[in-house]
Amino acid sequence: MTGATTACPRCGAALRDDQDWCLDCGAAARTRLAQTPRWRLPITGAIAVAALCGVALAFAFARLSNTNDEVRATRAATAQPPPAQPATTAPAPSPFTTTTGPTAP
Image (cartoon, rainbow, N blue to C red; front, side, top):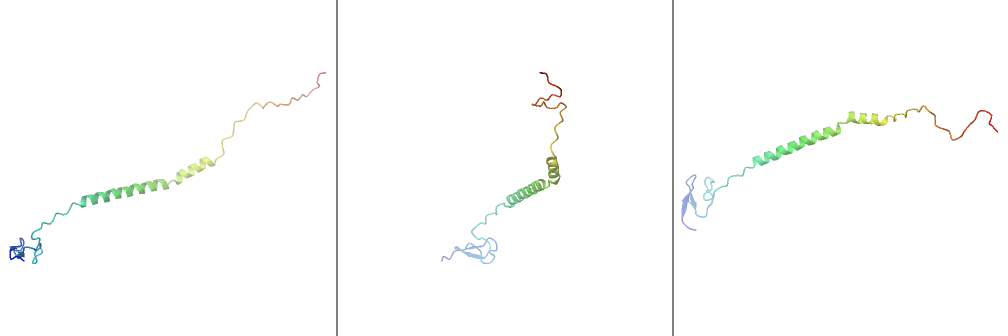
């Protein structure tokens, strides 16, 4: 152990050469604390994107599940019988010939 000492930059207490922290006030004697990264902006952005996705999913679910009127209209359109064919005015020709009077010899 060497006898060299330095003073704490915060409180002025004596520090040994192998001390990184002041034992009196707890301040960093020889090290510098790095500033915390700015994490609030990315977290806030991620929460905003997640909220927008949730709103979009809720809207899509509500839109796709709210089809009662459309289902009724589709069922009514498909439940009706097809329209009848228009009646023809001329009867179809018969393959058999019929005569109602005397036949000539």
